[in-house]
Length: 129
Image (cartoon, rainbow, N blue to C red):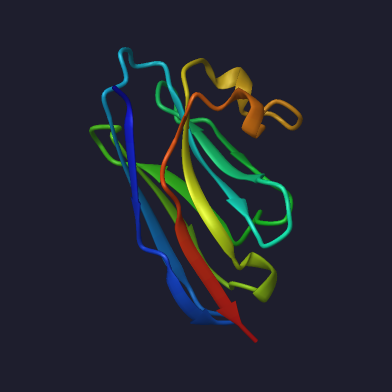
């Protein structure tokens, strides 16, 4: 049973920083893409960033490139999202996600909610102007 548990959300002012964590457990093999999606009020869930546990290759949505950094713990069972220079438009529920597959999913058009196998419960991020 795959389990994803997020932590680290909160409220910050624009320009501030937050770090999200997701403890991942129970996946049956090592080839996993872990990542983050977000969903604001009245919007569809969108990709933010992803990382492949085998070679640490990454994907970032254009809207967060240069501001967000995704990383893995040494045991590859915790994925982090360091968010800096936050903007009000970053306000959303952030969901940890696991895709049972290879790094080929970490490309534009493939890293979508439709291919996610497991979701966390979400953690709220609120950025005020």
